[in-house]
Image (tube, rainbow, N blue to C red):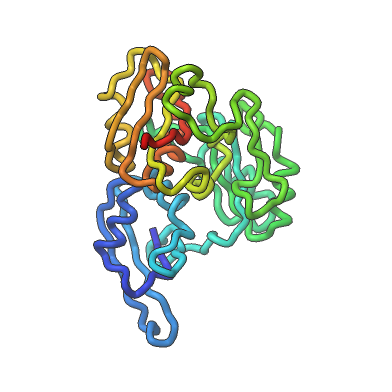
Length: 295
């Protein structure tokens, strides 16, 4: 990945620590800008151990602030410093993708609309298979709107797809309701034990990492994990969540089908919720949301 607009205080080690939250980083190199004294900013390159981890970092890290600078993250093209910067483009969410839809298939389907700049299917890091959704970017907002209006409900492969804005900043009509869940965002131990279906009303497949991050207090680091098999053990859960950060505590109630996992940082808990939503564990799609930290 290419990382731009870096504050001069950012070092190789600092950048490695920040991006290691998403997965294994193989190498990091910060390049000083020759025009730094005239208002320029440093930039750098990060190499990951696999493509899916780099894709996750691209999705979650662009726009984050390091010191006072909002960084820009994009694919680094061989032979050039970077590909087109899509951070300010208009991104739409594509849901209900069938397993055979690849990046190329998605790009061809949406490439008929002018100014498409990127098309990505999100892949499961455990299985290497599609997670059933992706994102498409457009340089022009009107073209993105046309794609939403035209493609929502259309068949791509063997399924009818769902198309909407990927985040709130591009539209005032963003909807994230879930008729099957309670509207409460906070869950105490007792309420979750009595009724583990009282989950956050926002279906995570529709939201960005930044929205997950903002759904609860910055001090909250507890993740609720639902729809668990009664056979699940801590040995099944811990390796799954450890890739996103340190685990401070696991409270598992397999007979009730849920667990609470306390992470070391709010940001890492948010990344786990965003990344693992709908992942299959013991043949069941798990459901994640914020829990409530015990005082």
